[in-house]
Image (cartoon, rainbow, N blue to C red; front, side, top):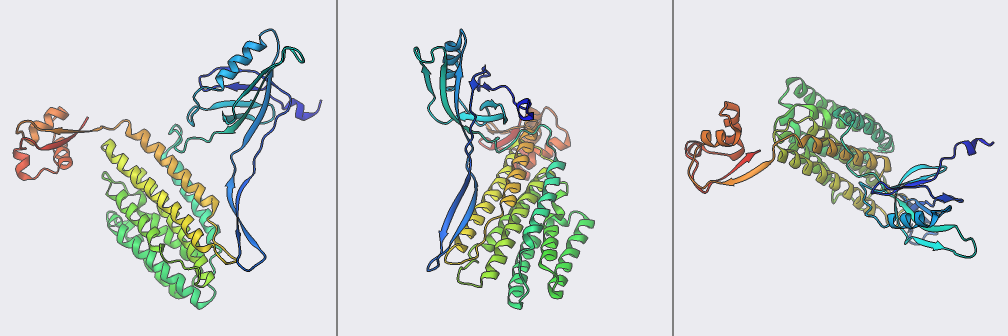
Length: 425
């Protein structure tokens, strides 16, 4: 018996509600391919293809049931194909060669009972499409160290792309140096106050800035300088914080880097300078966004809404980074022969890191207190209100209540009627 026959599995289908069927199938087929676009070059006999990823994979299937109860099995299977399918709860199709596949019916199922020719064979034809995993995976088995490792892996991916930066000519190096100084200024303005919290990190933060200045003057390679800037971006991300100020500053930095490139590109400018800047954009923007995720993970949250605010910062930064990457591609795609194509691996790793961070923080938020807003119907004071809602007048609870409600000195002594207060329960 050939080895491939021994590797065959039994065909099965599990519906979203958990019903399991074992239909027969003679021919298994799958259809895939690339998504691509062609950009015709004006007055030239060429076109530039752009790889836009893979099309969703499809599985056209002709199933059949036989035996004494083949008709009812066929009917039940037909009904199962009309259940509610979601990304979180798809069908599971197991085909002999390809194992378990997350799917949902794409075409209208066709059921045929031939009562004369081929009687006793009850057929159902349907085409499935694959269902992706949810964007934000479950947090089970995920932890901060895995995301940290992914960010380090992203650095390796970026280094491969950064090797394509060409600054051999003085004009190109000058433009490169100018963009580096702009990015470093954004990082410095946003993160200096974070680095200041830890003496050793602050010293290193300043030292890296000095090293970058020296490298720019000494004509060090673009790859080394890009790596130094990314080190500067990431350095303070793991500083412990009990507020979201660090997350907010990282968001400010990530968006500042992204926006520093907007409006810079001009298809009529020097082509190499433009392509260099596009590579620099994707490297710095994507890396800053992932370091924002790391900063959020190394934050000690007190309340659920703090987590949600951090997630807003993270997801908005990711969207801005990817949208501008696409915009830059569009700007640099015209009547030119060399174009910037956003690096697929970089974008994929950014999405995965963001997704894992969402999963971890959402899971973490379930154990935190939820925000509740109350309008006082009578005058009160900070101590009384703290005891009423937190069942303790410890100094930490009183400070937390005053801080979360921004009470001034008078309001601490007497909180007036009609005052809106926030408590976490």
